[in-house]
Length: 356
Length: 281
Image (cartoon, rainbow over all chains, first blue to last red; front, top):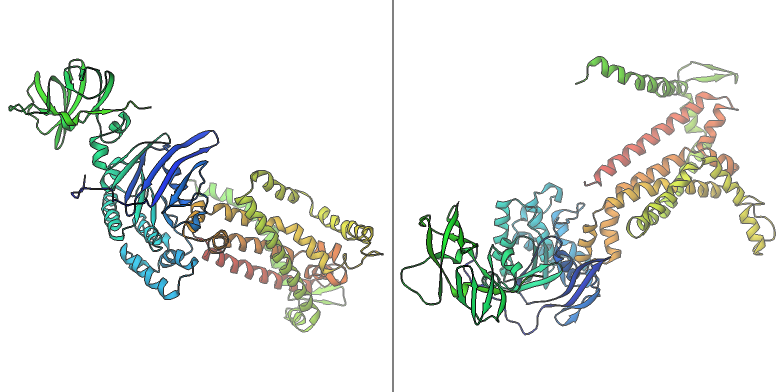
């Protein structure tokens, strides 16, 4: 699920937000260690990670609910890490929405404007505008308890965006929604972000969600960043073995390199890696049946099919190539039994760092 | 499912209990309030409104009732002013919540009478307060107004009923999701604005429950005014006690009791409604 437009990190002279070597521990538990991350103006950045990776803590540090033990957070060049949340031009959409139960939808949305003493007429028009933006104008007088999860989600979004923050933080905002609504909200959220042009930092544990929506993905593991890159890059050029396996699924080939040649089972190909052991990632969908014409920059290898699993659009083949098992996704059920020749493009054979 | 016989067997004892020891006395009380006393000795069953009309026409009863309500109102206000910050601190800032919570609860295990007497020792003419005042040369002889005054009654009742305001307010504060407080700050509200716009509205059910406890319980109190009130600190329950005792005017006492009951039920009904209106979970 990728959008057709080629995502790119917007070029800016100064990052909107820059997180510098930030560390945070709770008791003896090291939640974040030495995290550095820049967020550009108008960018959609996802912080992706498994539970316990520290992604929510990173978000809470940016919002101001936690203070870093060391390191700095700067917004447009100014340090904000010691400011309380109410002095930061950052707004948050909470995982459980956190709508005020005693206020109507309109009053919830107006909250930020009221506490900052905006003129009354302006409050009304901006609240109406914000509710229209999330298609909730018909619910202005309702109490949050009367709304469905998806509707509460939209109100929470309007309540944050009405303040025109420079940066919007979203803490797994879609995790409570069912699959269909979730997909719908993903697209809506993305188009809303393009429309308002505010930078979004979106925390999620769902790699597909991160890939679909983001300009860039920051993958966090055990409180350290594994890789920060565009979805295409993180998919095609994973930096570490962990990234390769976490984003989609990947074959990890543990090879021995000598004099520019990597060998692993029947797979033999050229590499620029130094001599010695090395790990390579090869996507299952990069492997295909060998074509008749001998193309350049293609690696061919012989393998036998161990197992074939129907997966709808594709077939998953488990291949044995010289004592090593490879998974291959192929758009054809017709693979001859016994030994066949397969191939993949040399550029799909990506060296990765062994994970910590 | 349980059989009808089983259900009846289970329900019968409490029904008999409530009927015999609650409803019947109330009914007798209510009947009494329409009767009258002849020759100061016998109660005659001549049904009429004479007792109620006496309550309206003799000003002393309204005066005492008004004073009782003033005292109860003062106690309620003070108990809220003490109980709310305490509950707020324990709910949001205290490191050792359980300990503090227990410290507030423990006085409830001490006999009411002991606590009232304690104040008598503190406020009396040879009491702690007066000794201190003289020691510090603020006064040269014991000050009389401390004890046997509405002040002493309010002080004692506030001490006794503050835990009753603390408990429901603490429960309400504990119940407020922390992310609402974070959301408020995130939207630009300082701690003080967050307190007034989020924490106070969401703790209104607790405030109402606490205020109801403090007001209703101190309105009907008769021990504190008896021990510490003196003539100027008499409350409505003391009048009832006298009417049922030395004065032997059960019918008039019953009429006052019936009025008080209506008043209290009205307060309970009203606060119940308000609490419902302000609870959102």
